[in-house]
Image (cartoon, rainbow over all chains, first blue to last red; front, side, top):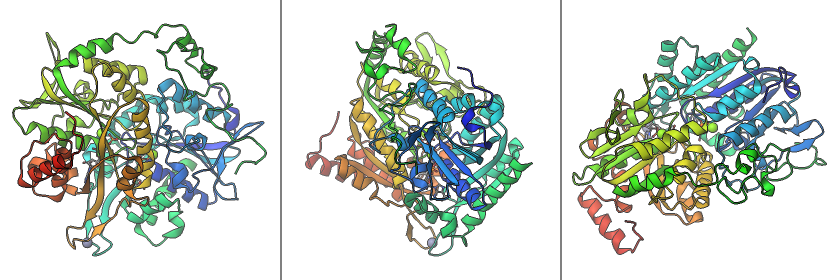
Length: 268
Length: 345
Ligand SMILES: Nc1ncnc2c1ncn2[C@@H]1O[C@H](COP(=O)(O)OP(=O)(O)OP(=O)(O)O)[C@@H](O)[C@H]1O
Ligand SMILES: Nc1ncnc2c1ncn2[C@@H]1O[C@H](COP(=O)(O)OP(=O)(O)O)[C@@H](O)[C@H]1O
Ligand SMILES: [Mg+2]
Ligand SMILES: [Mg+2]
Ligand SMILES: [Zn+2]
């Protein structure tokens, strides 16, 4: 299947950013969600494409669970957060009748659905389309690049947690990016340091500094460290806008800095 | 929200032709490629051609190979980073601390193999012998196989689509010289896709004792884990039980507990009640677990007195794979036996 050089429904999408990590559970979906919200608050039109078909988390994190995708003449209408229509989301989570249903699909089917997400979703005009991916370097990742066309992808934000077990996997993701010609826009170190809400003692539950070290080692931009923050995980559970709810927190500052550096990188 | 007058999309419904369906009859079925659900599936022509209808002959080869393996246990989770590999490694160490038992770990996380690092085997290589690939040994009675041993450098990415990953898993099961084993523990990547289907299919002749499901307490994780449980039910894989990992963090300074990953929907306990599954135990967040993993040391051997390692032992105990005989564990062993739990052999 050949990819059109300018897929019709993506015509008015300015930037495409992949959020990736070799490792699972490091916070890709969380960072995608917070980036989407930060960009939206900065007045941008944002789309989120969730290609984690076996474990779609974004609908819950954006408080959009139990919504549906509708079909119109031009294709599939994504689900919008709020009435402003500045944050659009497409996820396999919207296509399941029963949320506990497992998508037990081998690669070719996943590739086919991702192809449809790319060609059939009516994104309209977007400043940035963020693509949340599952862990690994396999079918979904190759499908996104193949269906979007490499030239349509501005680059990838890589998320890691500080410990070696995680940065090890992210090093493999960096190799993936190099081999497939995806630019690395930067590395985010997530869950670095937990500040006890009772006594303010900081514990590095998942070690510390691994993401920054990795950025140095590979000559990548370091986008910042986001602390392990129970208020953030609780916000993700409830689908609450963390940036709006906790603008005083250190986590807010860190997330905001990541978003600003990213925007800057995209505009230059 | 989309205009209400337009139809709601469901992937099993009327969507445009490419979308695959869950009611796929399977490539080995009589109806492969010809059922209503096959209409428009990208695999339709392959399935309809009849080529792959006969069961893969490897299944029989694997059955013969696995005849010398007493127990096969999968470690699964729908969610990533919840501690599958950590649990697999600790389970293996605990079982292998009985010198009379032969234990092996097979890492089928092809794109993100962590077992070599966690078990302190980075840089090791697999050797070919007359009877197949020789696994790497941590101890005389603890063997490990991982795609990590086949890579030139730790930076090497395995950029493989499904079929290649499946081929690798087949080789791991059929061509590795496992020898006589009491336990084979299979560590998996997150999700319900090629690797999981392949392990289950390739071991269908040999039989799997069951799966241990790992989760963390928050709903973001549980929602994926429920899908994994659904997967187990679909492929008729027995579930030994569920382990909740990273349940709360005890501050080393003030000793207060924080719920970093809050059980907003009741955690694993509630899920297990709802789905009638045994909850095997709850392992707290402990920085030493992470540190030991990074250094490739066994947490159980390094810090045997911590609350976290107590839970690991309790879990291993309830599975009746009791190896470490400490007074507490022994007591638990007797209790579980008395309470008439169905214990697998
Ligand atoms: N109870 C715990 N306390 C502290 N750290 C833990 C705990 N359990 C696991 N970890 C750490 O969390 C990280 C993720 O664990 P692990 O690699 O075992 O997860 P996984 O489920 O195998 O991930 P993946 O889906 O990417 O394969 C590791 O660094 C591990 O050391
Ligand atoms: N900085 C953080 N502080 C606290 N919890 C976090 C943080 N980042 C992520 N989480 C939580 O960790 C879990 C895993 O994150 P998720 O975004 O689902 O990871 P991934 O998409 O990489 O699998 C989620 O419950 C999320 O809310
Ligand atoms: Mg995710
Ligand atoms: Mg793992
Ligand atoms: Zn404290």
